[in-house]
Length: 124
Image (cartoon, rainbow, N blue to C red; front, side):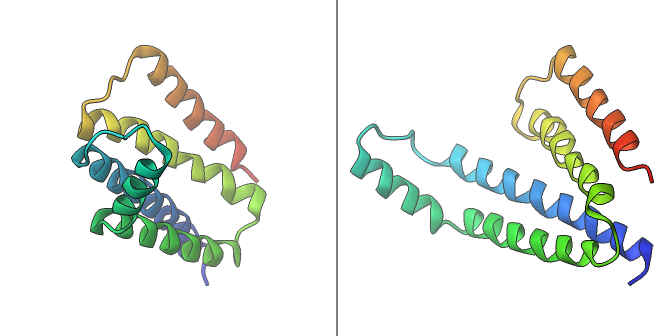
């Protein structure tokens, strides 16, 4: 596998992970409120687990794991892993765009620091 393909696998890891988070959030938003009793919570979680969106999110997590394994055949862990924090950047920005969740200046500073950390941490 070429280095470019390995970096592509890291990108796929990030994209599959982000999709999984969004899919689960979409399903939770479409579901009734969380009940209070333990038996009801168990039934609620089971209903979530069998929903197509959550199943697709779990499948995306599995695909992310496969892509990650492929990436690590070519890249060092301490070089590749900092790049996975792009997941956090995508989730923070995407949750604002897709779900209308608030993104304030402090979160944007945090995202900028994460990006700086990715650039520094993935060197060498």
